[in-house]
Image 1 (spheres, rainbow, N blue to C red):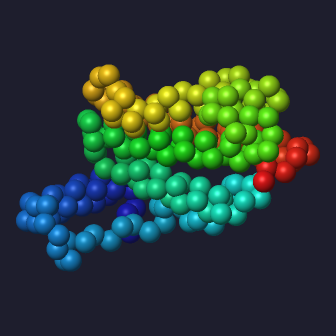
Image 2: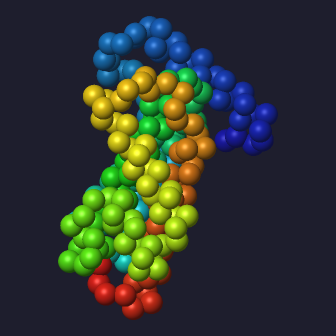
Length: 197
């Protein structure tokens, strides 16, 4: 059991060296003995994620959001527990933002289903949420920013290289935005808004 930060640093260094030895020996080959046990307790469970979206009446959407958030937990582990850097880190951030964009797209579409803006595009829906006093203009700006970043996944549309375009600050902004939207929708529902489903 690790007792202090000094032991933590020593154990972490040793793990890194051992992982490098495995990689040096195996290269890019698959080998059953090279499978490393993923640490338990870091990835949150589907139940935990679903609970935060209990305001949704669509249980399938709750589950699919939970699965996507488990994927973001995996990205978060890679970003927080390894020294991955450069373009590889940027691509993890890009994927996390893209997933968050997909979740936001689903939340806004489901929330406005059968209402004004429900069948419209992403940015129109975010404007409707402002017009209905469900979210702030600042939150709309963040939601729209995520969508613009998410659309960078369409590689054929890009006019420049995806290079030095993503940072941890972007990743944190996207996560905060998702939490703010979730909280705003849940609060609005609690205050007697019509059913989201």
